[in-house]
Length: 110
Length: 111
Image (tube, rainbow over all chains, first blue to last red; front, side, top):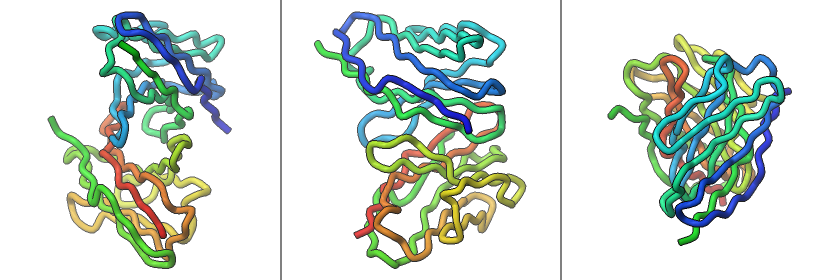
């Protein structure tokens, strides 16, 4: 079945860039997503990318997709303490269900 | 901004009891979902719902679970005879096209 893998933890200093990586197995994945979950809160959609794109930029967020290697990354520029959260990578084939990774906990220190 | 709302935010129930988790999806959305997240684990798909019927369900979604859209706005998840291992955060989601919007979740604690 489909699987999505992420590293579990990333620690950065405020002002640095953060790069969170994700790999997936389903070659039919059409959409790849990044969700953010703050403590005790729900899942907030940050951004998504179509599988026919290799990059998408949205303010401080840059998503890179290497479809050949099935590798997705989320870069957060000028990381702030408010960015501390768990970041989930997810994939789907459109209206189908989302398959999530286990999440990467990002800790931003002052 | 429209949002998915879930009630209650936290539900404590005794083992063996039935619970109903409620969700109000975004009004013009057509696809509805329930996911769950056991503490410290990944978010897992339970069931999807479209055109007033289940369109897909996972192995987790057995006879203990049921979903219903009793009126034009609510989307409910019923868990019969709850077990300790049903303790989790349950998320409702809805989408219109490619973006799935999630509610804040209901934390279910079975004691």
